[in-house]
Length: 315
Figure 1: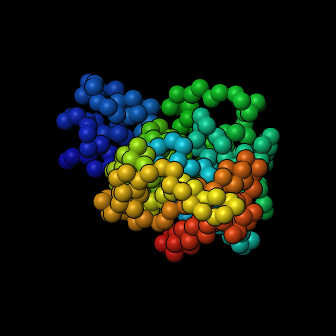
Figure 2: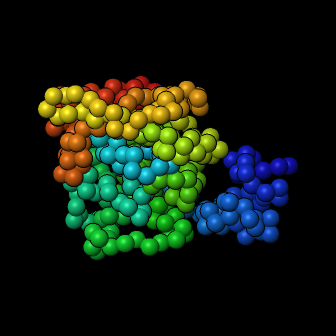
Figure 3: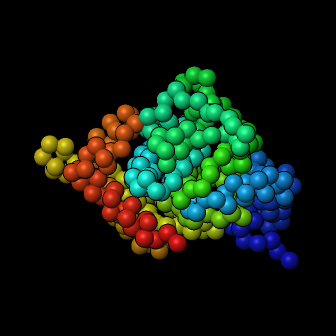
C-alpha cells in the first residue's frame, strides 16, 4: 500500500520513505532529493507532545496561517492589522503567534518592544496588547533586540512546539500565525503540529510583480500538497496612495496580470488589493493600528473590505 499523498512530496524519488518515516531524509533513496534536508530535520512519527498541543488548541476556534513564499511582501504588517481589526470587538479573543524565528518583527509592530514572557502554573502567558489581544514571539525571549538567531531546523521546531503546547492561550476566537518566507522547517512543523486539531485556512500575501507571484504560486502548491485550505490571496502594495491628495500611482507594475490573474489561473479566491500608504509602515514602527489611526485612507477601506470578506468565509 502506497503512503498517503500528504506524506510523500510529488517530486520525491521512487522509493521515498515518506515525510513521517524515521528514515525521512536519511535513507539511500533520499540522496539527491530536493526535500532531503527539510525531511531530515522536520518532526516525524508519533509525537508524545501532540495530545498536549491538541488540548491547548481545542479551545481555539479559528487557526489562520499568513503565508507568502516571498519575503518583504507585508505578511507581518497584514497579520498585525488583521489582528488589530479582529480584536476591535472587545468580545472577540485574538491570539498572534509569530513563528518567523529568525526575523521576529511582530513585537515591534504591536508596540511590545522590551516585553518579557511571564510564566504561571498554567504555562507561558502571552504578552497582551489589550485584554483580548495576546502575542507570542521569540522576540520576547531575546536578551538583546539585535541578537541574531542562528538555529537549525530542530531547534526552530522545538520552539514552535513550545508556543503551541506550553503557552496558555485560553479560549480564542482567532489564532493568527505569522510565518517566515518559504515552505521550509517552520511551515512543515506548524502544519504537522496542528494537523489533528485542524487549520482553518491560509491567507496568502503577495505584491503585484511577477518576481513575487512566482514564489506565491509555490506556496499555493505547498498548501495543496499538505492539505491546508486556502482562504484567499491578498495583493499588498498595489499602487502608492499620496496621503495629501489621495492620488494613486503604480509602484510595482503587474506585468503578468498581478494577483487577480494569478488567483484566476490557480483557482484561488482573490480577496482584494491594498494600496501602499507610507503611514502603514509608520504605524507598524509605532505599534499602532493603522486602521484606527487613519480611517479615511483608501488603504484602510481596502483592509476593511478584505477583513469583512475573510470573516464571511470562515466556517
